[in-house]
Length: 94
Image (cartoon, rainbow, N blue to C red):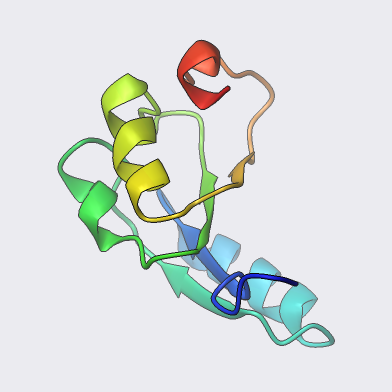
């Protein structure tokens, strides 16, 4: 990886079962995982560390304001663990 902080993944809207599952799956990879029970929105985007990958759930708000904040923190990947993406401003992500 070219970004030394790209080994961090920040999860929002997590439950205990999410933490257990992703922690177990991460064992062979050793990524640094940060879990937040709170939803991602313009107020909570400040919880993301610079260069992290962000993983969101169905009720997280990934609007233009949030995307701008994440981009300022050098976030280049927003992963979704939900079926749809109506909570994501796709144009803002481009």
